[in-house]
Image (cartoon, rainbow, N blue to C red; front, side, top):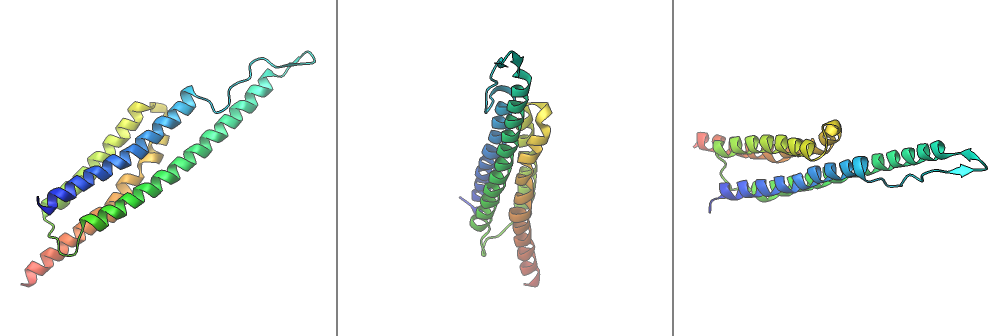
Length: 169
């Protein structure tokens, strides 16, 4: 089995792990917003003959919104950290000092990262809601950025180094 196929397999595996974070977290945010609430609405609240239901509903809505925002922020941070770690590990494992990198490898990696990122965005929108496109973008921008900056650039540099070495000989 050649190194190019191993690199492609590792890239696919890393992309699947990235999908799990970005698409999975978008689906959870959708569930919090659409179906589940952190705090349930209390129903009718009557105190000394006065109706406090709107005030209680407003408080519950505010707390639920704040908890969704905090959860979303945590998800963005967690997915960013894990995708960064996956990208660095992929670069360390797949781009070795003595490996030869062909132009076909570089083109495949760039296209695969682009297509995988677009598909992750589409899957996030389809599994949640079109109204949550901002959430989907906030949870899926890390994959193309880190994969292109950390892995693709190292692969491209390695290809250029191989070209330079063969030209000098």
